[in-house]
Length: 427
Ligand code: ASP
Image (cartoon, rainbow, N blue to C red):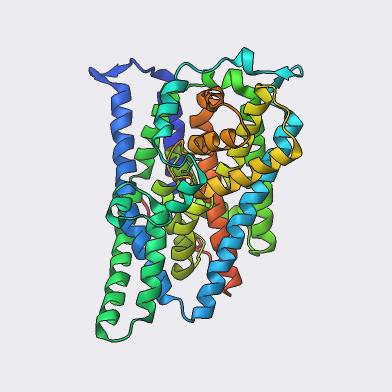
C-alpha cells in the first residue's frame, strides 16, 4: 500500500481513538495520553535527529554540484523571488478575508469582551518572551549565529543555512585533492542522510497516528466552537491560497497537473499536518519532491531547506488574520497604513519564525506591538492555535514543494514523474 494511503488510514484510526479517549483514560493501567505522546515524540525526535546533518549536507552538496556561478546566482534569485511573492499573496488573501468576514466583530460590536481572555495567557506569554524574536533586530541577528554548534543544538536553522551557504560557496572554489576529497565526502554523507531519512519515513503512519490521537484527545472539537468564525476565516484564506493560487502557479508556470503533484506530496503534507513542524517534515518533503515529483537533487536540496525556514505562506497569512482579528476584537479600527504595517511585519517575521509548532505566536506578539495592541490579545486565539498550526504548516510545505517544481522547471528540468510515487515505502 502506498505511504500516503497508510497515513490516511492511520489518521482515521487516530481520530476514532482520540474521540474515545480523554486525557484521563488508561490502557492496561498506562495513561493513554502517555502512550500517544511517547510514540509521537519518538517519531518527531527521529525526524528532528536528521534535520541538522541533512540541511547542512544538502545545501553544501547542492552548491558544489550546481555548475556555473551565474546559474547559481540565478537560482538563488528565483528562489527568493518565489518565496517572497507567494508569501505576500498569501498575506493579502488573509487581509481581504479578515476585512470581509470581520471575525472579531459580533453583530458589529467588538467580540473581545464575550470571548474573554484564555486563562493560560500568562503562561504562554512567559514562554514566548524568552525566545528572542521579539524584535526585528532578533531576526537579522539570527542570520549570523556567534556559535554554529550552539545554533545547531538550539535548532536555529536560519543561521545554519547561512553558514552552509558560505561553506558551500567556498568549497566550490577550492582546487586540489583535499577540496575534491571533501566534496566527495559531503556528497556521500548527504546520500547516506537521505537513506537514513527514508528508513525513518517508513514509520510515518505510526507516528502520525500517535500525534493525531493525542491532539484529538486533548483538543477535541469543543475548542473551536467559540472561535468558529475566526477559525473559518483563517481556513477559508488558507484553502484559497493552497487550492487556487498555488495550483494555478503549478499548472501554468510549472506546466504540470496539480493533482499529481499533491498526490506525490501527500506523505509530506500529512506529516506536516500532524507534526505542525516544517523542520521536522523537511526530510519527507525532500524525499517526496525528488522521488515523487522528479525534481532534481540539486534543485530540491537547495530550494527546500531554505524554504522550510524562510518560506512560510500559511504562517504569514495566519499572522495577518490573527493580528487583524485581535484588533477587531479589541474594537480597534486600523487605518490603511496600519494594515500595511501588519502586512510588512507578517512578511518579515514569517521569514524569521522558527519551523516548529506554535512559532507564529511569537511573531504575532511582534505584530501586535507594532500596531500598538496589548500582547495579551494573543490569549484570544490560543484555543484554536494547534489545529490552525497543523493546517498552516501543511500550507507552508505545500508552497515549498510548488516552488521546487517551478524553479526546477525554469532551470529546464524534465522532471519525469514517477508512475507510483513512494512505492518503495512500506511500513
Ligand atoms: N508550525 C509552523 C511551521 O513549522 C510555524 C508556525 O506558523 O507556527 O511551519
